Length: 286
Image (cartoon, rainbow, N blue to C red):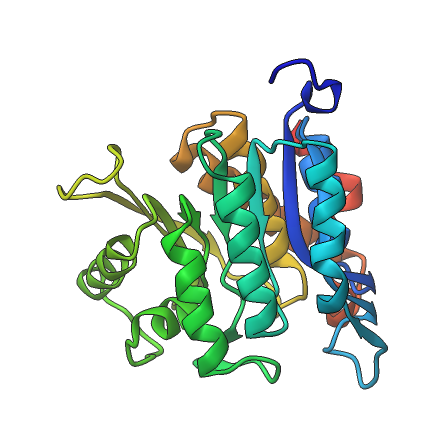
């Protein structure tokens, strides 16, 4: 890392929105990545008082400031062991993030992790659409690891969404995603009757055309969907990636940690909108 003291510690640039209440996005990624021994450097895409699942919220789009913000990092000659991207509010933001990955992730051995946040339950989120999906595909092509849910995997590959999936269908879906560039893929939140599945696919050799190693990790379905669980999952995967942890081990760890957080939240009767009680369980990630 040369003589630049700023780069003596491993860092992840976390590109996501900052939400003050509701435990999601950067508000969960920062403590998770930090407790796993990696410095987290947030690059905000927007600032919200609370997430959009509440009846009302304040939001300040940060697109106009992102390039100036990045320019200050350029002056400091920062390097990153990882770049992790999450919610992007527009195609314009996706273009800025693409430029950021090309500059700060090129030739440095940087692990690029893309969580292509676009939708759920077979539909786009209200803030997303086909134009953003096209830009998200460009980010996926530059990623080493992607963590889409089953809806997002379908949107990325123009695959019709369905409620039930066979292993053969998931195999075909992950091969389509591998063809876009990423070597490691985990499709999250796959419904398996009383379980939820995370389907993991990994090519051991960069650019290899041979078969990928695939595994399904099941966890018993408990409670209802909560904000921030995908952000926590992706943060664990990102920190483990720069720490050199085996991908399958990382997926299993992230799955178990999210389940533990949901269980604790149910025990404490936390409203669904308020996310998960991850704070008192962070020691499990050390």
